[in-house]
Structures are given as structure tokens and as C-alpha cells.
Amino acid sequence: MGHKIDFFKVAVRSLKTSGTVAPSSRFLAQKMLKKINFQTCKVLVELGPGNGIITKQILKKIQPNSHLVCFEVNDAFYKDLQKINHPQLTVLKVSAEDIQTEMQKLGFTNACHIVSSLPLTIIPNSISNTILENALKTLQNNGTFIQYQYSLTYYKKLKTVFRENISLDFELLNFPPAFVYRCKKEH
Image (tube, rainbow, N blue to C red; front, side, top):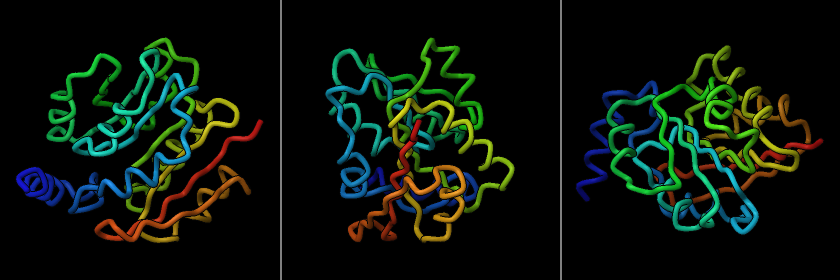
């Protein structure tokens, strides 16, 4: 229970960057990750991992030769993520806008999948546009951008970037319940 209270305190203080007051449920994490083939994925990216609920699920599933790169700008969450001692994890205190540049610095040409918990609906349009454009450029062909939101209002925006290649799922066992957008990059 202590982790939920700690998350709540940090989230309330930084609502503009966290976008929520409750951590993601394990059910939401499972729903977001269920279609990822961890056997073949070499590089995964997580945007806005918060306190690491989804991060820890990814680390349980990745193969020994895979790597997870997390982008987190919130100081408290960044410090929490640094406590996850895992050799296949890189945590950056860098904006998701810089995903392409930072991945190149790490020596990665692209990512198989990008899992995002960013509160895109409250991020200014110019920034969210840059994040989505650079995420698309970072994805390998047939890679997916997986995003959850608490409403369907972002569907149209994602459609402008990923065209018709979007599937939608819903997780009731999360507070609040969440929509999961799965966007595929075509050639």
C-alpha cells in the first residue's frame, strides 16, 4: 500500500507531467504487453514509466539479449526507476521528444515496440506532435506504439500519425479504466 500512497503524493504534486493520481494496474500492464513477441524483440522503449509498474513487467519478459530504454522526466519517478537494478535497463531523464537522438546515442537504430504511459491529452500539441513523429521514426517496420489513455479523444490524433493501423482495447480493472491504443508502423 505504501507504493500507492507514494505514487499518489508524487502524482498530485506533478499532475501536469504524470496525468494521473493512481499507478497503472497489473491488469493494464498485462493488456498493454499481451501482443508483444518478447522472443524476437531486441529493443523496447517505454515513455513515461512513472514508478515502474509496466517496466517491471517488461523486464520479467525480455530475453537475455534484449534491452529496455525508459524516458522519464519526473525527478521522483526517475529516482525510483534508478533503484531497479537490472543490466538490461537504461533509464534516461530526458523528454520523449528526444527519443530518436537518445536511441542513436545508445547505439540503437530502432525499437521493436514503444510502450507509452504519457498523458498525451494534457501535453501541449507541439510537444506531443514531436513525440509521436519521433516515435514513429524510431520504430522498426511492423513495430508497434502502444499507448493508454482514459478516453477516446486521442484516437483521431493517433490516426493522423499511424493512419488506419490502430486497434483499440479496454481495461476495466484499472483506476480509472483505460483504453489501450495499439498503433502499427507500416513500411
